[in-house]
Picture 1 (tube, rainbow, N blue to C red):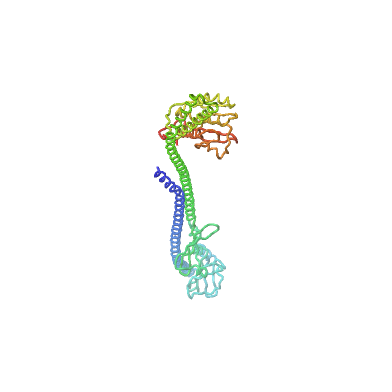
Picture 2: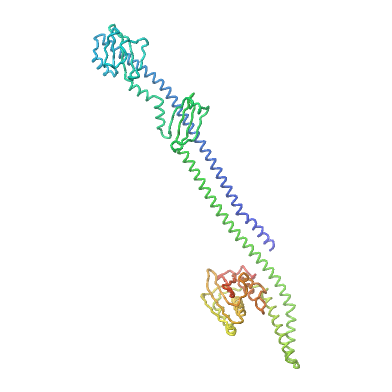
Length: 531
């Protein structure tokens, strides 16, 4: 039994720290989840930066290719313009050599050919042009380089070629509006604008000069900036002396970051709730287990006490009862056969017989308390048991001016030992009567509470404070001048042997209420003793 108790106490210490260890484990799990969250966040950031860098480098390659194509396209446009204007000038010179043009004829020819105007200079002094005034320069011929030239104020491209014998030179012009539009479409700014309009791209620009030197470097740089309250991943890619600055929308990246954050918060809350709940369960189990160990220890101590008391009572009963019987028989013989005794000596003998009888009842009660209680369960009507005991004590109550109020609310049967139950009820009623020598009342209730049957007995004449009320169930504790103090203790052992319990209450000062809780149905194989 000692080994079993020691093992239970050892388990108690393990259980006591289990819920604390559980909290430590849960905290560790949350830290691991936090570390995993930061790792995922770092991985997502690294992946996004790599993606943004690749995207920006792809844009840089496209821009380089477009720049090269733009230069080539401008050269091709220039060659086309030179060819077109040269052929037009030669054709005009050929036609003019056959029959000289008039001004209106040149105007019509220019409109049909898509030219801004034509001027034919003859002998460095006379010229014909159409439409009039389209060429603001003088009538001199500049045919040294025969290159296309540009009139900025008129936005006209023109070419001057030597004419026929009759003409010194022929100048043809082409309106720069269409050429500018074509150049604009193949220009770098146009491409940057088109790239900026693509999905996922906020802006694309080329920076030069000191601004570019401040951002230039050997490697691609990625940083998060605010652009009109929106998060943008700004990627800087070196382009020779210049830098390409591409603003990529970071909406998906921050959505992923928010998703990771929400998942972390949700998962942490779930782990924390599970941890708190499991710790609460462990704590509840710990408290229950500690209470169970305490009850076991109290029961073990009570069993040891009962065993010691049983051995002592057996010795006392054997060693004292026989002499008491001899004394009792001797006193009775003296009382019957000694005729010469006077009244004083006869009274002394009577008192001695009463003392011997009282001593014998104390020894009997001690032996009864220390003896094992083995209930023999059967169907018993508790209402009948109470009525039977009240019938036996009705006259003593009348003699002591005690009023009994009995309210039975339960009339069915329970499983109990009829004799032991009667003994327990009789001890309670007898104790209530003896507590009120000057009269009073006894209130008895019989009702069901859950799976228990409750017998409540309340009476006056109680002198102890509320915090000491439970002491009346202890052996040899009594507030009466006469009595062994074992009646209520024996009743408590009987009720415990039935799997029930007794509870002492003080509803108001001077009154006591004892409640007996008995299970209506019970398996009696658990207890063979009432300790």
